[in-house]
Length: 271
Ligand SMILES: [Zn+2]
Image (cartoon, rainbow, N blue to C red; front, side):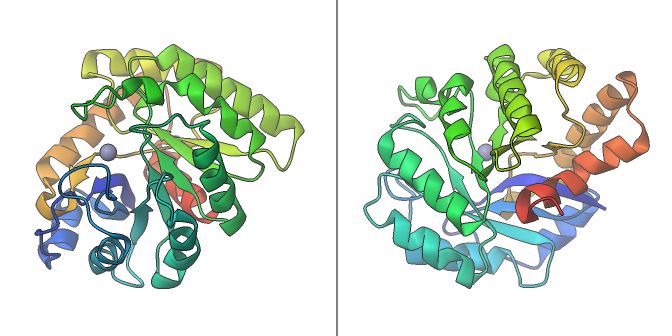
């Protein structure tokens, strides 16, 4: 069973419709991680907490394999209330994009500590942002080193930190070595959603796999939209990655883990 670990809802007018599960299954996916509409402050389509929550839940029917992640803004004065209230509505984790603050901004750090206390995970953008603003510098992988002081946090960094893939690798090494000596260390997961143009992807994967333990920590993501889930595109992305995994000598079990087990370990914690 395959899951897509990075699906966005970006259009508040897109109506959750019956074809979403069908489109996912046409791509070979049983479900995935669905990110809510952006919070106020991110773009002109942003929605308030109540609207985002309600909209997100409508894409992720209870009992389905679709897991809703609420996109929150650490600079929102009500963000702590939102973190505390969202799980009761069925939210399974949180999404943060550092678009106008560094991850080590004290306000963001307080939010990451709050998330760790709930036991829910957080999915983070890393690498160039391309949101039309002067914002990529907030997302250099090394800026997330601050999370090493956040015990028990489960977080995933998306996009391999493109184009700072070596910096991303160094960061992952630091977190993995901390984990080896401290049972309460934060756990870093890799969301392999593209950022890396395809010609760099094999090299990035090869380096990461050669130095770090990624086979048990990386999950697949497409960055496609829930409202217009392009099954053919998702299937193409998976097929391209599968070719790389085989070239790297991965067996079917390792490949299966990238498409299922590792995402569930991120969402639910490792059992
Ligand atoms: Zn994304």
